[in-house]
Amino acid sequence: AFCPYHIGHFSIVGLGFEEYVQASHFEGLITTIVGYVLLAVTLIVCHGLAALVKFQRSRRLLGVCYIVVKVSLLVVVEIGVFPLICGWWLDICSLEMFDATLKDRELSFQSAPGTTMFLHWLVGMVYVFYFASFILLLREVLRPGVLWFLRNLNDPDFNPVQEMIHLPIYRHLRRFILSVIVFGSIVLLMLWLPIRIIKYLLPNFLPYNVMLYSDAPVSELSLELLLLQVVLPALLEQGHTRQWLKGLVRAWTVTAGYLLDLHSYLLGDQEENENNANQQPNNQHARNNNAIPVVGEGLHAAHQAILQQGGPVGFQPYRRPLKFPLRIFLLIVFMCITLLIASLICLTLPVFAGRWLMSFWTGTAKIHELYTAACGLYVCWLTIRAVTVLVAWMPQGRRVIFQKVKEWSLMIMKTLIVAILLAGVVPLLLGLLFELVIVAPLRVPLDQTPLFYPWQDWALGVLHAKIIAAITLMGPQWWLKTVIEQVYANGIRNIDLHFIIRKLAAPVISVLLLSLCVPYIIASGVVPLLGVTAEMQNLVQRRIYPFLLMVVVLMGILSFQVRQFKRLYEHIKNDKYLVGQRLVNYERKSGKPGTSTTPPQSSQE
Image 1: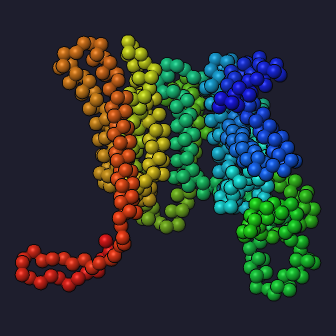
Image 2: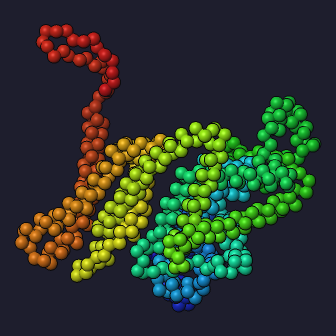
């Protein structure tokens, strides 16, 4: 950090760009990045000079240093700069949807530059993530080789760090510019253009009401994080939404393929491939050379060969119809029209349904559109789900339908009980504990009283519970991980209420209640009996939670280190004194003297 910062600082001062860098509110970060860029350029020049004068060791060392700086800068660009550009472009294209202007964004940036940049980066990162998820879904439907111009993230041979090392800078720059153009064009097509059409057709529908009120019982930012991190993944994972989306994509692909005679290009020709496999190789060779031009040549085949060097090429041949470029152009136009219509439906239908339902409770009062959109989204999902279930049950008769309704009612009751415990009580206790341990000691001085908002604590507790569950599933094997994996494996249909309450809900709630109650009893019940002053009682009440957290963390670290030292001691002892290991039979001795032992049993120890 020290050398690149000062190199960048001297360079910026020498070039006279100091005022512009200070106006960005991120002087240190930009100066350090400029220093790294200058270091990379210097290393390239020195590497070339070392190669010129044939200093092999210096050339190798300079090359390794340049690779380190190059990979670091590319990681910053791909993980930091690119999502930030996407987030700002999304915000600019959606200004009319929220009745905002660029002046408002400029004022918010000047008042809180760090928070503004982080929120835009977060929005851009979510957009990039869901875009990549949709591309992975497309790969499951389309013929291998259609999306040859996009990197396959599920490819076991895909190594992003290796690509960063081997590909030259201009290739990375070209790929970055192409990605910005593609992502920016999709935002224009699916956000800016639908907003213009909605404002023209429905003048009173926009803008969305998203004003942030400081006296609101729930923070809207917390609810937005909750919607993005909990509601949408739950819909995609548990609600068969991904299967529906995959089915819609497949139906659209089949329709477009038959309309434009591109079925073989989009989905492949499985029957013809099977027939081809049964024919003789000579017939295959003759047909490939004469009748049907198989696109095994060209840029995309070369690209596949480069990406999968030495491995199986994931490319299926297809039949190229007449006027193929025109058909591809019409396919792209059809795709753009479909995306535009889908975006119009997603921007209007859930909000319209949510506003209509909310009007029965609130009348004409304005509500945050997050509530109306979430309500409308769930109503639309429940309607589609109910229709699909009824269509599947209708041919089975009335008795089977009543039996299914009874089973589903029982399952819904069990799910509600589990949801109250795991999605209500546990997040509330976790959010309150996080507020007492982290937030209140950092934000509220000792001479002021902290205020707690249960709804906001619950919303943040849901996020904390999700993060803790993810870390637990990625960590080593212990009882909590085993229980969570068992609950995931059972699913909603085979939900075991007794197992969840006895093995998961009761232990977790007990630990959280003990963590909340024991420090409070010590601070409010034991400390006053010692005859300390009121200031000391207040200090103990406010600082006992972070103190106990520090004690628990310290004990955990010490116990971990003790276990590690024991393992190291055993390892050293075995290396120095262990001669060999031998497998012996296990012989159980009888309890009475004078009796014969049981026959030997072979076992491993």
